[in-house]
Length: 321
Ligand code: SF4
Image (cartoon, rainbow, N blue to C red; front, side):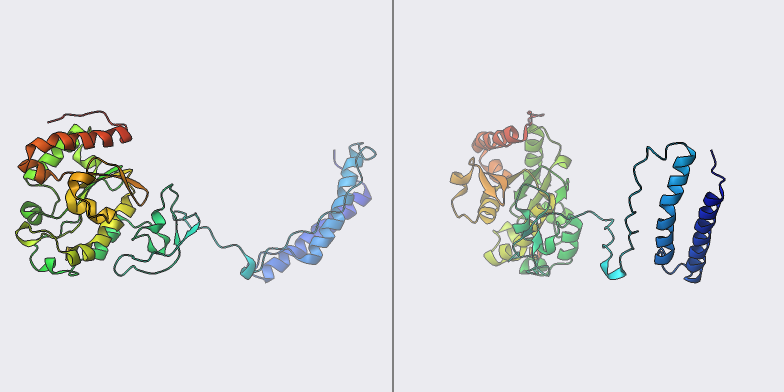
């Protein structure tokens, strides 16, 4: 029902007048501010209880209605300096602030606080997590660029960065590219690569399911061992790759990979088959496929090591070669 008493008409008229003045004020401000005029707001508040009471009375419920409470003042929008920051559209990076990273990527070694990504592992402590960000493999590859940080650059044909699933749960780390890898720019593509591919298949994975990379990204001439300064120059990129991928398990293939990642000079014959931890990631050292080609009798031990990895990852044997 409509209350058409003179009092109601008066209140309604006052309310409309207030609204009109408020709209005029907004128009004068030309949309520069979105703010309710304080005076108009107060008058609106004053009008509101009496209007409500009149409508209630019209409906015969005025006596039963609780007394109208004074309305709370209308909130004013915050000043620009007080306004909350707009939410980032990009991925949020929550988490506690981790200690600064001492040894970051070359060119990225900013000793700034690093935010720990939402993971149970302390990835913020890894090189490559400087500035609190989990780098992508593309970013790391771009940072490497046409790398000349060690003398291996002068003899390489191709820099062999790594290949496979950038979100792999399992990463294989070898020593360095050989002749075929150097020619093709892809890790583990020679005879040792064929054997590694078979080992991966036997574990129930396809090669594309896992990620494969090396400690050094350029071929040491004549397949000699990488020298300490070459390992030191290239290793931060390997560490950054592992930060980017965040695998559940790393398999270190051979002495160089195991000793470099673990900072442990124990011979591979004693390291292999024993679970270790690398920055919170489970790491299994085992023999390098090139060694297994020279020493086939050791394949059984390597397979035992890989079976232990499969058990942790819940994998069933695949097409074992
Ligand atoms: S081995 Fe590593 S550090 Fe040395 S030139 Fe190649 S990419 Fe750069």
